[in-house]
Length: 184
Image 1 (cartoon, rainbow, N blue to C red):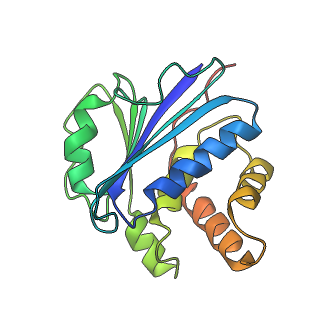
Image 2: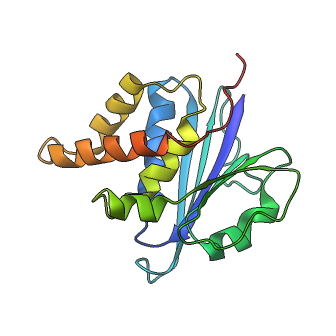
């Protein structure tokens, strides 16, 4: 089984970090992975997206043209990528910054007010991890020890508060309905 994931938003929303997180998680599970960032020259405030492929077989292309899962951090990202999502795929929407519903009827959607939740819980800058937590809530192979091990690989020991904040953001996001566990 292969999951093709596209995370998209403005630069500065943590799109690339969320992609790295998912990629390292896949590596720790012994999966074949790829991570391919793409961002505009202005980076912060410009457009950014990240293609992540996690699977049992070698990755043939790191570019995700037809994602199984889209994490849309803002309206321009949803507008751009909604139609690219595979039939029966999932779209996770940061409903704090997206003021419309998914237009397609052949995909599944989850609305998470990630930016609002981040602000209300003093987790500014972690809407990305809240949305990722919602997505991960449905992965059968994803559990708390794996999440913690993944964060240990990404967050410096010099900043334990960042480890705790990211973990709390993932937990907060996991309270939203994620996609159902995959068989196998």
